[in-house]
Image 1 (spheres, rainbow, N blue to C red):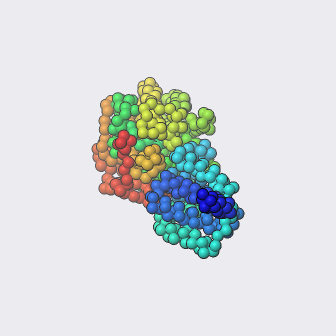
Image 2: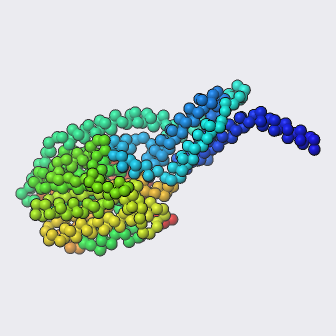
Image 3: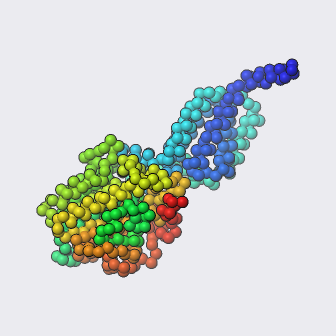
Length: 528
């Protein structure tokens, strides 16, 4: 019994004598473990790399703490800041790239806050936890006294696993690469913005051939956000979320491919003359209407501007009338329902006694964060709340198109209604949500046409592209222009002449990639 008591006293004495060491080791163990878990859930890091990362961080923190607590606190706090910025960025947007910087360049505060809401809740929760843990560790650890031989061992524990992480970290882990990417990308974005301004400032050069044969009608173009075609029942989605589209007389294009996986890349190549890679900013849909002496109304539920004029605002500047709903009215979440566009649409119809004109309605549609667009309300629950909200946004789209078409029909005048989206979205099976991704579905959008002269439902299977939308509009208005050299009839099964489908890449649209080589994430994954 005395021996046991003596042993206990020795252990107690040793613990008290080395209390700071034990507490510091446990705290750093917890911190390194939490960082490893965070990387696993956010970047899908395998167990092998998680273990290597844990050993590396654990060794590095102990080594630094053996030198100075102040140095440790600085490094721990710095690592926390980098993680808070880098982890959501990498997991949600793939890191720093032209697309991200370009979007931020034109984004206003409310849109930026909406982007923050897209960050998965498990990552947000983990970052909050690791923030509290970091401050707890900084507060409780003390400089540890260890031999230099042990310090060298810790240095080895830091460096050896890092060698195993090197190839992986070049693409995923080391934020230095992202800082370099920002350094290289931001000047390109500024130059891109300058070139756009110069392009829009050029005088338009529409060379019209049959201007006198223009069919006087009301042309309405509804441009949507982030709607992928396979989420519509009219395109095969199992839930009946498009009753108007299903039951009305329209022309439905089954194989429409957009000109980009994000808004600016796509719409600049859709609403202006484009070959898919380059575009003529000055020769766009607004300048075309000017050349035809048709009033043009640009009614948008997009932000008017952030710090800089957006490319679409530059395009809209010459419209007869332009309205930006978010500059006029906001709800408590700083979002405006797309249905608020309708009163302004009615006013545009009434202008000029309802004569020939072009009206463009730009919706917020299904843009992430999707639940903001439907005020966090949905009908059927599908997989997750975000997917359920997406389905609800499609129902809202259908009701919106019904109202627009009814208003046009009530005028009893010639009209056409064209609907398409800027791009689709990618379903992320791991996060179970829709994101701005890089897949076939990111380029798949609905394309539909209604009109006073369309008396039956018709489906077209032929490939059609966003870069040919102006070609479609010219054919609808019965005009020809030397600016567009396409000869095929858009509303037909005639081939468009493309042997291979190439689309602008995800990042800046300066390169073309083969559409067929893109991954696919069909809606069947929602029902697994």
